[in-house]
Length: 428
Ligand SMILES: *[C@@H]1O[C@H](CO)[C@@H](O)[C@H](O)[C@H]1NC(C)=O
Ligand SMILES: *[C@@H]1O[C@H](CO)[C@@H](O)[C@H](O)[C@H]1NC(C)=O
Image (cartoon, rainbow, N blue to C red; front, top):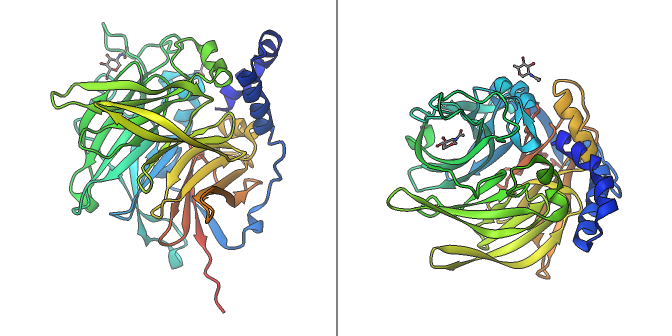
């Protein structure tokens, strides 16, 4: 991410000299402000005394870019990787050293009502789910995880998961992973799995693999929740194969949302639900409470809200609003009350440090914002927690709010740990 941002800044001058369209101007203006955190005052954790935060250091919980909370099973599912592997292989961030990629990416599960450690001061009961039978990259069985989504399927505790797998491309003649991935840019799929055995599951059964030209620069997937395994997906840098066009894509609003669904003959249909116009669309989410799709744009710090409109097999989008969050946004989540939570970057310039030296003391600011409907019907945006000096939280890319306990969970694409913040109950 940091690498990409730097290369984007490198071409700013060129764009300024050659173009002056108003939407480009807007993205540029907003992007520069968010990048340097202009207008933000960093606040330390101590400014939020109603939360008590700690790290959970467990090698199974490294580089967990995304998470999904299953309310039915009270389990948190995390898409984890290896910190060192991410430094070599992050196709979304323009990092393409396939030989250094992690070969142990996995889904970890936390039983969030089963705290461990003295007085619950450690982590939570944790396990890793196996994926027997999943072919991975040309039969090696591996996953390369970034964004994820899930759906509670019924009373017996079964859960379906949608995982973005950013595989390296292979030489189709030999089946070997191509040495130079910069030209091909990885090979992205969305993989649908189901837990085997409900709450106590130790494995995932592979249901379906989606591979389509409209899944080009996938960032986050949002499950529709029907029985066709349908989903929406953001393409954060649009549809071009060329790396420089991808770098410029946030300025020209080339980001898109695609909709895909499975057919009964095991074929699939994908179409462009929002063909373009988005500036680095990131962790979109489908809010079952209002039926709307919330799509954040990292470059301009806004969340666009869409009503899905079905006509036959097509799902198009009717834009119903835009919320100005004022921060560069990563993944959104919906809690059980229908509130939307956003992991935001108070200072984008500092993100690169976490990639360069993830084990060091990198002091990357992180914050959690809540977006919800206020009494007047408009949206209220509130910063609920900030670790402006990176004292405890990881370089955060996702935040989950457990409305039952008030706890917040913080995941990170690169940091070798996650964090949890307990809501402090004031005793009189
Ligand atoms: C790619 O990754 C391998 C394995 O980690 C490492 O030995 C090599 O130095 C890396 N190459 C580059 C160009 O960083
Ligand atoms: C990309 O992935 C698809 C689906 O797994 C596979 O059929 C195809 O051969 C892969 N292509 C390359 C170039 O790796």
